[in-house]
Image (cartoon, rainbow, N blue to C red; front, top):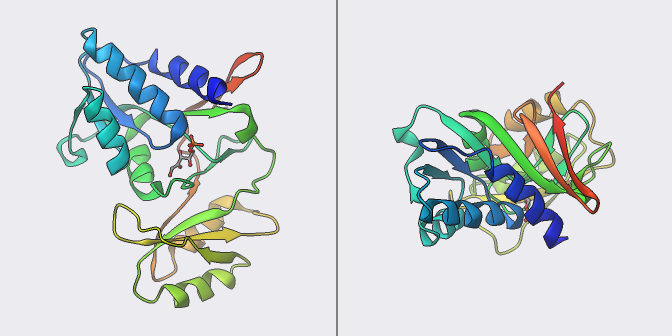
Length: 218
Ligand code: 5RP
């Protein structure tokens, strides 16, 4: 599995050019991309990274990549990020690592969002528990509201996001009408963001046992 993740990540970094502002995703697959980018920087590539988590910022800085504040850049040229599941429309579930809020902000400011995954993440319908970031105040009441949307929320024990919030991992029987679902969840008081990434992906690079597949937006 690690080899498939690495393959996808290395393919993605080939898209990075001198002078680019690069969004740095979070997770074990993206880590391969950040480390490779660090090697390229040591060989003279000049880029500025925008990190989607404190962990990615730390990995990037250690690898020698300049990391800047997203407030200082109006847009990001390319972001490389991972996903927990990808459907046939290139919609995603993200947030397994708990970084979904910053990841979604960065994705929404990126001209190109490249997702890197191994082949096990490609699905015809979502099944991965949907992470929802909620403020600490009244989180049990927010969980009750999520349950009314036919979700079964479970607090992620012992976890606080980089933004000081909790994550509720929501199981479900079937996740339908994902566009409406994304908006409905975010409309609940107490919800900060949810892990449905709808229409944000430009392409998905899939590391497979027999090579690499690139899924593009139709
Ligand atoms: C973090 C994420 C990650 O991109 C997602 O969890 C995939 O991680 P990995 O590459 O380790 O499987 O959304 O919030």
